[in-house]
Image 1 (cartoon, rainbow, N blue to C red):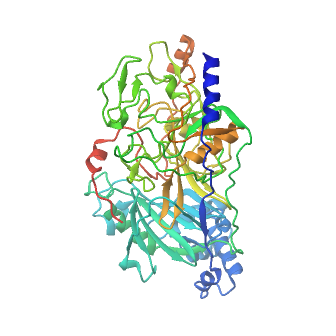
Image 2: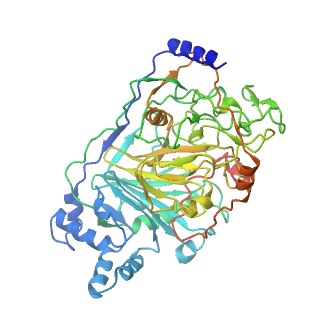
Image 3: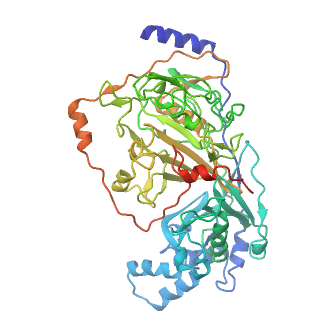
Length: 574
């Protein structure tokens, strides 16, 4: 059998069409006018740009470590003058006391979080506001803190996909921020403006719906945004020459793998797009030079919803509720034969399959239908079952690692882990989902943690608001900054390139119409009784939530909540 598979694969590789070349992203770099930035502070600090910003950095460094590393002028809702005067008036304070006093000089009731990242690509920061503490916003019934994600962009990405929205002018803020525009895109309200030759974007996660106690509407978020922007002051940064123009390297191994194959980007499973006549979008861009996020190969990128044991993303199944292991069924959208067994060979086999624009009710501007999955499902090397009759994989058997040096954005109890990357060639953020939040808390994977490429982040899980809430896989997605802020891009070819480096060989692309190689699945592993008992008795760590940022970029993947269903027909504006 093994020989037959290898022979079939060899014939397939010989017949496969040549692959389209991977490409680097198109990036525009800011031309920072440091003289203009320094001139705006001339009354307070009559000096040249270098001296002016050096003094600012000294004052702000205590509250915002690393501020001097920003390649663009840093705007913050922070009273730098007041803080500097307080330090001068109270000499001899301990570093701890000085750091604690910095929070008193935040403006308009905004509070800093543990997330503040600077570098050659600019800076990213997160701030919180408790609405109940602000009398002007007391009419908003939303009880949770509101988080503002704010970025100063030294580089912006020019995307080849569907055109980004034009947005609308914000008349009330034009005097303070000439040219400022408001956008509602991918479930964020965004305000974008240019100053000193740099693009700045503030964003708040919201829903474009009617007000409710546990939902922040985008019109309510507008009030918070107005308050935030009016509180901004120049706080630091370091003048430098022209920003470097290093490009992302798209290097591929010379040798061809004997078994790794992948469908072309955009070739999602037939009829699994937003509508039957809307598929994916071919995107050969390698946005970041990543380390593959699974620690070890093999790994299998494919659909967890439209493959074996999948729920068809609630588009309907031929058997409404299959329950018996290996029971045959299919998704109504395409009739593709499936079995009710998460360990089925088709789930743990090449070729890879793109599912960035697969049917989901999440806004994705780079997908032809405007909605999609946002990222890529990745299964690990194998599935471990409790016993022969089990139809589900056991979680936490395979390790997940940092795909790049970067900075973590994640609060206690949150499922999503964001890794921000800031280098001379890249400004990106990637998101990991479905690891266990309690274990992430115990391991210190929280906002402010600096990680290095290959560091252990956690283990593959099936957590989606609860244990066993989804299948055993890693959801991995990627965003890059544009003129209107962070937007989702397809990570598929970035992952292909990373996987090729991991295995030391390039894959073979399967174009539309090419023959498909035979499935050579990885057999499931059956756990021994002693191993089963050990897992059943292993407690999960639990930690109380802290005041660190609880940014909510998007709802968890998987089955939509009742609230999600109620608002899925909302209109998009901007």
